[in-house]
Image (cartoon, rainbow over all chains, first blue to last red; front, side, top):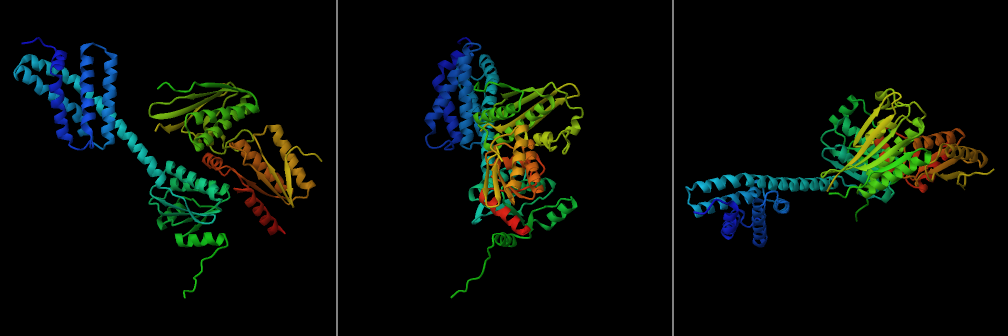
Amino acid sequence: MKDLDITTFMTENFAQIISLWQSKLEKILGQRLGNAPSIQLERHCKGLLESFIGTLTIKDNDHAEAELITLLTEVGTIWARKGLSASETSNFILTLKEALNSNVFEVYGDSDAQAFQMILEWQQRLDQLLMICHQAYTNSREKLIKQQNAALLELSSPVVKMWDQILLVPLIGVIDTVRARQITESLLTEITKQESTVAVMDLTGVPVFDTAVAGHLIKTVNAAHMLGCKVILTGISAEGALVLTKLGIEFKQVLTRGNLHSGVQAAFALKGLSVTLKSVA
Amino acid sequence: MNNKLKSIQLPIKTVDDIVLTRRKAREVAIKMGFGLADQTRLASAVSELARNVIQYAQQGECEISDQSTPEIVILQVLIFDYGPGIADLEAALRDGFSTSQGLGAGLPGCRRLMDEFYIESGLQQGTKIRIQIHASSL
Amino acid sequence: MNFKTPLLQLGDVLITSIQTDLSDAQVSEFQQDLVRAIGVKNANAVVIDISALDVVDSFMARVINDTARAARLVGAEVAVCGIQPYVAMTLVEMGRQLFDVQTTFNLEQALAAVKAAVDVRL
């Protein structure tokens, strides 16, 4: 029986551990990593085990430690981007633990005290690795969510050219400070681009209408006004209107119309236009 | 992660310094990747505060620095003077309050423009104002 | 009479612009020039172009408001044109309606606006 040494054990059984680890991973992940995963997976597995051994061989091995963290971060990030779940990502380390454990029993037999000692020792280190990997996964996911939020924000406040110098702003969903700013920004940009003098802002799709929303909208309207663009608000719900009057808010110098139809009519009237029925032959 | 910009110190002594200070603040904002809207609100706030310095304390100083964390890009401007200070801070932060000929939108307006607004002042203690604009580091 | 402030006359409309931040001395010079010119040139309206300003703080807003008020007192209709979109955003964020003057995006709209106001008067 050889003397107890984790690193010697890992180095000697390197190939077996890797192949067992990788096959376990592939079994769990299947095709989830895409079409050509095995090459990258092999690189990740080998690289990780090598640096892991490196950190165990020499204490405070900064280079190996850094390598380890880079690899774990890479795995966490890539897997998160591929849409794998958090528990699936934890498997990267958990399967390594399984592979090590079954290998050590194979070599030393399953009732060996030294084997248990070794398992206990790497258990703790592996848990740390799991944490790092998990953190990278979470960071990546959060970044993704932020990006999606930003994209959604842009999508949700379109400003449409309805007619020459007339804009339409259909608002849908909850309006908070960030969105209000975004709406104001895109409206003002469009006003300067189209040199618009009238904008119809439709609030039919805004579910909650309170002081905060009203405050934001007044700012938007005032800013548009400074650029010489009149704003017509349409689609304020009956509840919304009552809430506003109870709160003592009135939209001064703002034209309001009950629905989009009369709002559009008002906008045309302001520009001296009208819609007439053409006799159909 | 050591690509933070060095902090910049500027004196505020004359009316021309107001323009210089806010121009510098805008420059830093551009370098740090802030958009036009953020640049403009920062420049306005800095202009507002620098003008206060000239108006009430004759002179003061300004420090523009990059205080970013891994998650958030933070641009900070510190403006301070050793002038007469503000006796009633709460009143000064209320809309419509002005001891001079201003519009009374100065400090409260400035606070609304910024993501972070911190003021320290007292009678005969000078005034120190710290403002920040934030952006997520995508 | 000599004016240091750039002033263009188009019929009975005076067009002027604010190019950069003004010092207190320049502000009073600008206001005096404009108000005097209205009298001298018998103007019915004034358009102030501020498209060159990339920052308008409450001081500059007050200067513009005061100028407009003074011009109105000597009988001219006033419009401010060319405010930058981000400046407008910042002004409303700061709160309160900072301009009590008619504002338009471009010079053409401003001219149309003051002409309409003059027509109403006649």
